Length: 140
Image (cartoon, rainbow, N blue to C red):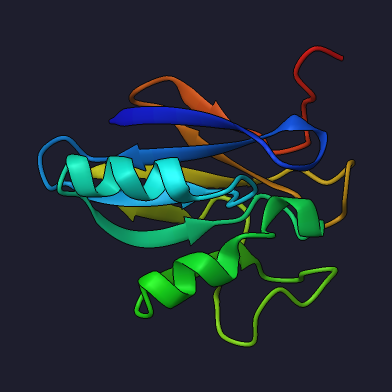
């Protein structure tokens, strides 16, 4: 799995673009930064953006979701099955230990309440990567 990290937006949040090297299938985790550079990477690498993964429903973690939905209207949005805030009307509801694929890469959904009751973490055990949202604050 390839990972690109983008920092910005409110509170210097992190967005991640992840993709499968073999299939070029990609996902964005927490669309919280202006997507211009992310769109450029998607085009430069000829990626197929298929999913938006949201770690929790605080607005600063999905504030640019409309830009992705406009550019990629068939994209699937993934949120914990009991969201605190309504991000969208149509989305894939996930539960603890559910497996999500990004091409041939598998991510395990871990329910990690604390920061917010609907917080989830995405864990790639094979590549030893974890995407925590605000479950862990960098530098604090």
